[in-house]
Length: 134
Image 1 (cartoon, rainbow, N blue to C red):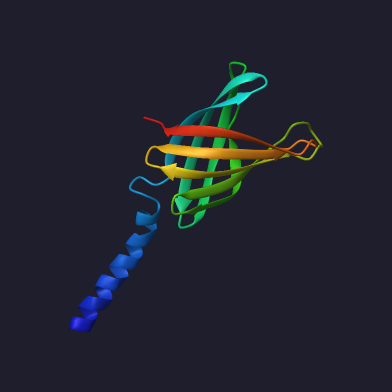
Image 2: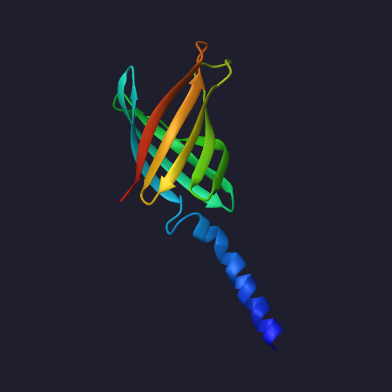
């Protein structure tokens, strides 16, 4: 009987580890940020869902006052409070997409991201801080 209770306690503890590793609220949900660009400030709406270490979601931008449709992220990974993913943005029909890589840290209701992309002049990096949408 003691072994059975110990086994049940172990299973319950192991089942809770992924939730604890992602923090109390985890990455799941909607986030808002503003990215600075040569064209000015660009409001961003991010949405994430984690399943174990797999991260899925999308990012939508508001370019020059016009809402752009959400673009799905790819290669998303969440490990504890570290996240990474890629965003592939189609620039012109028939051309390969521009790939933006993101890495970041989740701390409560704040997500600090560093984006990196190469537009032929070496990697360009930018920092974005997202806040959980209320």
